[in-house]
Image 1 (cartoon, rainbow, N blue to C red):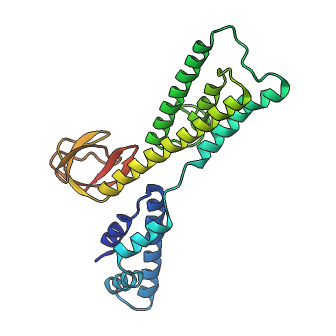
Image 2 (cartoon, one colour):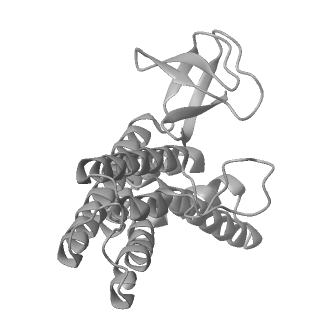
Image 3 (cartoon, one colour):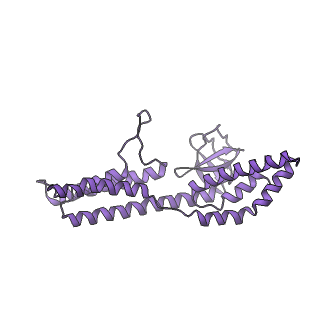
Length: 252
């Protein structure tokens, strides 16, 4: 077994994509460093590689052990950001006598605005996880710096039209925080599971693949993309990861 196949089998056992990339980089560097050390001692490159891999142990067993250690986490950063914004916008004003929403519109209109804004917040949250956006980001590529119009901020605004008591607003804030956390966790879970299934799999291009295309992997047609040279029709490729939920392939 060579280093490439060893790392493929090891990383296939890791469920969390972000952790998988870190482990791949760490193990690649470790293997290369150790191999170079053995080569300087007079061992051939092939023998040095085999010695290092034997010392590391069975890649499936090692990968499963690492997977138990690095469990999937919750996106606390966005939840925390939402809670901070929600408290500033909706709770702090109560201490200055401006807590209750003052508006001439009927409650059903205010609740409708709150509902629409909340739906928009969850839609933005889905797009953030789908595209792997950072906590602060900008929609326009030509913008300088980041924006604050993310899902946490939008959801915090969604609570404002609600004209209930402070206790009711706090309940809404906690409810939205729970739903936001659950949504982002489930999206990450589905994405990691898909990447784990497809990572390092070999397929054949059904069409030319550039920024989009179709390939056949394990008997199933998939929409793919490549960030390198165009993969011509009928040429084999390997899946090396996901961008959003779309597999990324390289020609082999």
